[in-house]
Structure formats: structure tokens, C-alpha cells
Image: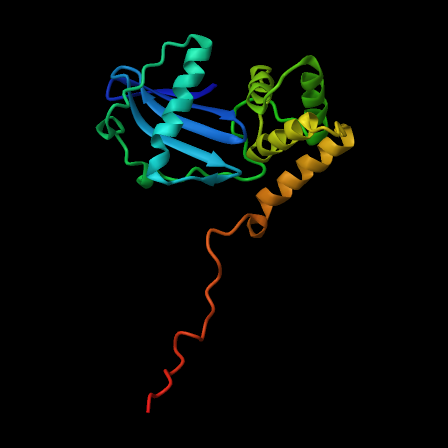
Length: 205
């Protein structure tokens, strides 16, 4: 997990934290003094998921992360009143292909592909572990690079085992194109067919 910022608000410590697991970016603003959540968000492939039902899922992921690493992170989630900001009213986080989701040194796709391949060969098994390892080296990872890392891990685990440097570069390029061109992203609903609603109804004799 990366603590992106720590600030004082009305004398309270507010932590802005985020991490990536299986292609999903989990973000949380956490009031350390009150041990309560101010806001939660979940972003996949650059799109914020605003369904209120995912609040507990996001919180559970943070708690799971904390337990695995022995971090003293207490989340009060027994009732919705502990969520200080309604999930559906959270401001969407901007995300572009060139915007980094973590602070650090920016690297191009070729260098990132080399790093990912080396880590996979050393035994890193999940995209979350890979990205966390890369970020721990003060290397920034963009949203599209995080999404591509998930696909790279899937290709590495496939029975064909056909992953190489060139394939990694193709996956990174495809993810960047999806990020830059919203038209390539899946549609939420089918397009409306104009003109049919205004047609006159047939007269019944």
C-alpha cells in the first residue's frame, strides 16, 4: 500500500492511502485519530465503481491487506454511519494514461516490462505483489500500466507460457490505448434508437 498523503484537518491526522490488487485500485481516506473511514473508492481500468454495495468489499480488502502485513489498521464497519462520506457522492478520481497512481520515478513501458518479467521469474505470483514490489523501489505505476500488469500475470500463468518481452510490450500498448480512447471501454448500456418513440400509434378500428 502507498500512503499518498498525510495531512492535518481540524487537528486530526487524515491519511490518503491506496493499493492495487488484481487490477483494481482501492483508495481510502482514513481518520487515524478517530479510527474511522472518511471515504472509500474502487477503480478498475480507470473507471470508478460507484455502486454503494461495494463499500464493504473495499473495506474488507483494506483489512485483509493490513492483516497480511501486521499493520495496525482498525476499520469501524459494523454500520454505515461509520462511513463519513456517502459512497455514491464521492468525487471521481481523474485518471489518464499519463497520470501516475503513485509517486515515484516514471519509467517507460520497455523498462517496466523488463522489471515485471524479472519479478515473475523470481516467483512473484499476483499483480498486486508485483506492483507493490515495483512501487517499493520508488517507481511510479500509471493506471494503464497497473491494468496491463494484471494481463501480463494472466499470460504468464496460462498453460501456453508464451509470455516474452515482446508480448509484454503489446499488452502495455493495448492498455494505454484503452486508457486514451474511452470509446474502446465497455459501454454501460446499449445506445438508444432515436425516432421510434415518436411514431404515431396505429388506429384501432
